[in-house]
Length: 353
Image (cartoon, rainbow, N blue to C red; front, side):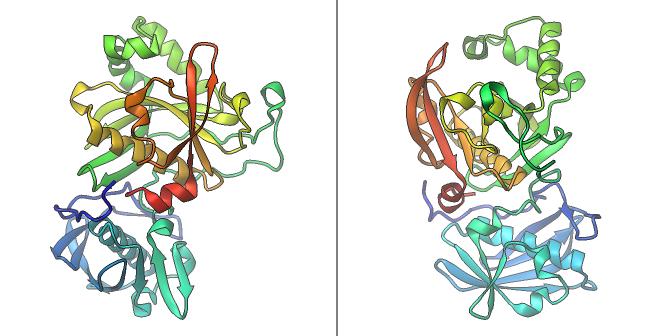
């Protein structure tokens, strides 16, 4: 993956669902508009209300933020996170940003969990910034619902899982693919026609074997949503439905017994149903987005696992660029699989977001 190609088009659209303030209220989505190579206007509801200036080059820079409206914790947090996103997205070689202390004087530093105090300076690392749920996660993070584990299949005890999310769960502008990637929870009444069309497409049916009548597929989705450890998503590019994804906690799923699965390991199955959204660029975008969503959704998740067929050469070519490593090969009852693992630290250190 080329880590030294600048983004050619400035960010000009909201890139996240919302910003949740420390008091629990929601700030309107903000966006950044480039004025020059190192200056951004920060927009609130389409109107400029702050200016961000970036100085320095190479892998380290400094950021100064000036607001043209009365400063409050909410406006500072929103403007700062939006400015940082614009800076990192526009400069792929940039790894550390120092923040002028006066830029944050109206915001509690713990409200910006990616800010560190190093050598008397306030700094933000790229790998830490992209682990914050503030900008892109559409619901509260999954947490520990109780102490200890509950009984699981074949002795694989696991945490009690939180309720499934609803609505938009993730949204982010991907500067590599120049497309906004989003995922939302499946709404059966809304999505059944599309799901039925995709599953009855011969290209999809060959792998999924779900070319069934619409009511059978409704039952399939209802049964899936009723399981505590898995839920389905619709993936979108620029707001257009593109594909279907099943998320699961590995420990209690069929993959769980094939390796030393951890209590918070995640896995997925996916497909792109709309042919116009096929291709390497968009495939890379949804792979990045889905992994990013998993790591944001649960801070305890350290591994994302996959089990593609060993002969799925096309998908496996994405592995290294997406920080997936091959653990081993193994036999499911129905296929020979490659066990793939994406580790949190490697993902945020190596993958261009």
